[in-house]
Image 1 (tube, each protein chain N blue to C red):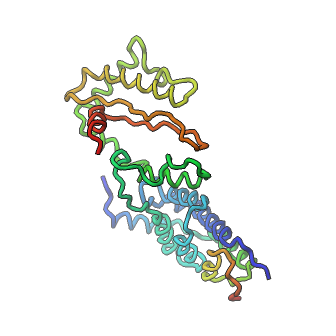
Image 2: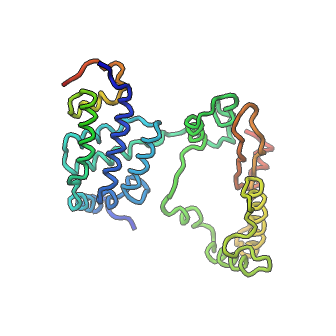
Image 3: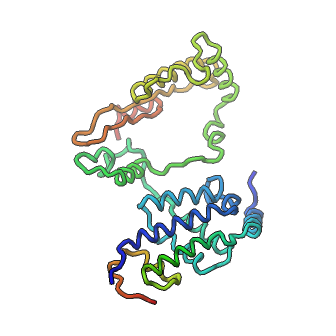
Length: 248
Length: 63
């Protein structure tokens, strides 16, 4: 007797079937998300893509499948759904900034002469970037809330942007490069942020170090087939000065 | 304003009660059954354990 060698694929397909079926249930749109998503439906979509990506341990989802196959009641099934969507918590990553430490053994710069499978690159990129959050509730309030008079100042500055002779803004920010490649976008952004900072000068209640875009050179990695993209950040030049002078 | 956990639990239970899964998961159960039948394993929840592995070492069948 020959055995199918793709049992894993069967399980993967089965899991996706179930997740899709759950998404088509009205309750999944009404039940709340286990995290910061809109509802449980968003959690299920995220899980579905993860399962589909092959890079997923299906064992964590078996209790859910088991519960549905066993004909458990709805409350139990939804409880298992929550367990399943909450499962892939990113492992704690004891990573400070990549600026503060010696280069890692594995990061995107060390792909030279490797096969550079997308799957592998994505994994390393994820590790390198650390935990990322999307859709944090009250982010704006928490992050910018302490800036005095931000609301008033930003309104006034924006008004200037529209009215000014140069008109920085009309139906979008002006000067956005037609061919939006990284160099053009960066110089557009540097120029725009410089102009905005000048406009905001009058409204600043507390003098601050002005932040500027910082970019790492766009140099290809020797032996790598992929084009290296620019690393860009928005930083306080005073901090950069300290870092360059006193590298830790 | 945050909603106290007890209230959200009640709300969640109410949603689950008022929106039953009904026959919504039957298609999934049917496809599980047909995969098990195709692989000659009995359609119990334990079959999942057999499906999880790549079938190379699986020479026994529980049916």
